[in-house]
Image (cartoon, rainbow, N blue to C red; front, side):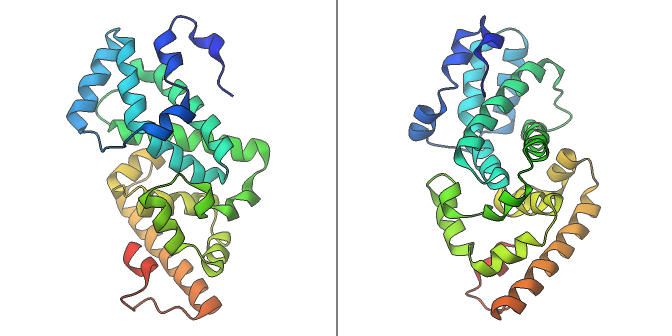
Length: 224
């Protein structure tokens, strides 16, 4: 849970972590990389109130990412608060040699992985991608199109790391270069792993329901 005592000197930062209200009204946009870097520099120089902009720009994507890994809205809301606090606390050490989004997703991945290990929630990953586990919007509609018992069974056969690769590539739409920065792996190695994951998921779904992956109407074939 969010521990306010760590931010007694940052009332503005505390205020923005009322996520239920903010998530309900925020119209998400894709922030410009240069704009992000400019804001980060200002925060690093002491303009702490500018961190409000960082939170507004990134809390929704991080929230969805946590939902897909943790499979629970409340856990994801708690996690995104902790992740954004950790990012703020570490921001002085951030260097633009790595994209900020990749840097933030690495923090999110490590945090969620620790939660899963500590709480023994690996079995709850089977709820991963279910429509009720993510926020309303285009992504929820995509999840509804993609979710099926066959897909759930296929995902259950993947390791946690394989699922994370699938989420980052398919739903977060990151490049293999960005994924490499998050997972400390080369883009080429991740590309090969993604191809193996795709084959594994496709084979499982074809065996379960006889889904054709070559058909134009297959949402998964076009998305993956």
